[in-house]
Length: 65
Image (cartoon, rainbow, N blue to C red):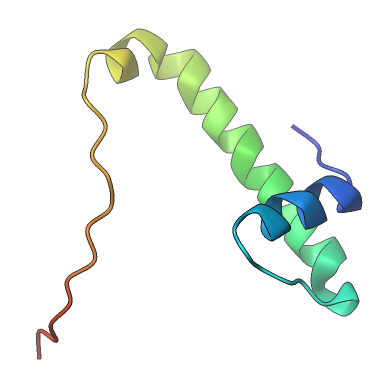
């Protein structure tokens, strides 16, 4: 999936991020590459991925040092 700069800006705004203009092209390229990789994984593993319940990310509130 190839995103436009405006699509990237819209996605970022949806989660409260403001991407500086100087970084927007780099973020757009990287996000497009990530989405393309995810689409390939879905194509290759689709049925297997559907058989597993997704787990939400858990962020511990304590330091593990």
